Image 1 (tube, rainbow over the protein chains, first blue to last red):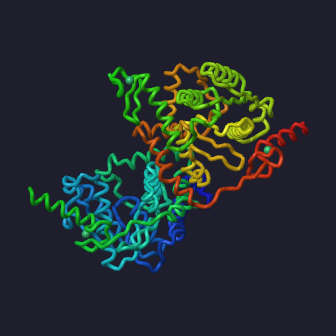
Image 2: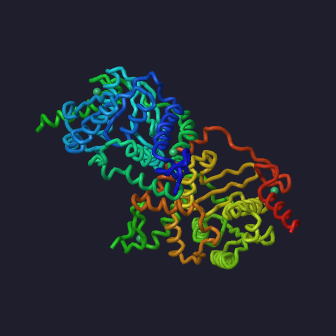
Image 3: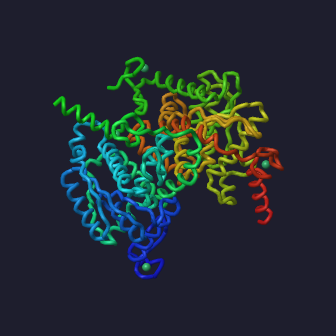
Length: 303
Length: 303
Ligand SMILES: [Zn+2]
Ligand SMILES: [Zn+2]
Ligand SMILES: [Zn+2]
Ligand SMILES: [Zn+2]
């Protein structure tokens, strides 16, 4: 029987990459501490900052919201109903219930009201759904945060997410993307500061935290995420991890420690400017959400 | 039936990452051309240069020697008998036979005479065998080349070898190693110029070339290479390659094209100086082969 490293009672969790066995209470404590350490390591935010958490209703965003609240941060939730049938209904219900449970407000918008539901957009836009979805979320979340005095947006991206993106960008050596792969994107050009406090927490660790804390979360993945290549990379990295525990964490943290600073010194970033239509930051004259809206409108007029 | 892209006869070889089908003759031609292109791309050497090929008796080194000879380069062979029982006997015989077949000299040395056979060294040295072996080969080859007027050492490292090393160094973000990962190491600090003309040729392609050219090569791997972690990475990369042909080549060439130049700009390299005992280039006062010899001598005296 494995014993908790802290209290010697029966361990409920074993973390191979840290060679650490912990009981339930000490695991929850470990998790909160690890989040706090990550926040400090990357100087993400302070106790007095107003934080807006991107809440999807999944384990990562709810665990993050819970940990931030436990740690005494002022974290409110922001939820976008993407209009993806039952998946969206269920996730909205769970996110709302959780917000009531921890006594923090959850702000909600509906994509159906703002543009149209994702399944409708998908009919008119040939890009992968995840990419459209990401664009839309980023846009409305940023706008809401600015309009309501939030200085920071926190998202639930975990180590598996970040390592998979890093892996994909490394296989192609996409230098421009690698340069931006950091758990903090500073406020600039009309974008609110964005942080990823779970970047050193694995998917398993975050699921374990949600389960042991009694958080009810949506277990289904978004039905449109199926077949995304990032899932292949996650599987590959998990194979490496299994052979040699700690590989994923080392790959990600050593990148941040050794390669990221080198990349920062090379050349400059693309310049952003306000969108001609809505004023939000954009690489082109018209931002990607306004372009999407224009495109959808044109197609409607034709029909 | 697949047809040869060049002559429309029945294809014998299909190269998925290049989406190319070729008959035997056109495959051999394609291979020679690809080697020539790589030599030119990295400005490895010219027709008038005297080249020493590191010959192990395996498919890569013999295919390389053959291709260089076909292309009209002056390439002679250098073979080190490592004293690994039957493996060494057989590989020396095959290397010698091949040298006679193509009418180019093969120079040989025996580790047993220079220090002691690898299996003996292994008893006294705790490092992985491949690392000792690499040190020893590099040392004697460099020394021989200098003493005999060769300006260039060519080794048979193929794309799979290079991609696996790159992958391993990338997983750890070993910046100092990544900086030196290039198919040409220029002459400097007492080291002869070293080149890898097969760096864009996969292991399969090189085996195919050897077989279709009728080269007799040693198929067994060195018995000490078993369990080397580089083999795990090769398997892993092959899985990625199978899912998406061209991944390996893209990973390696995009590194060279996009990341290598960035790494060159950052900081300086470790300084080399002549070994106090033998005068060969070394990071420490005494080079690694002389240190090995000293260590072996001490252990002998004790015994
Ligand atoms: Zn405990
Ligand atoms: Zn806009
Ligand atoms: Zn042909
Ligand atoms: Zn020496």
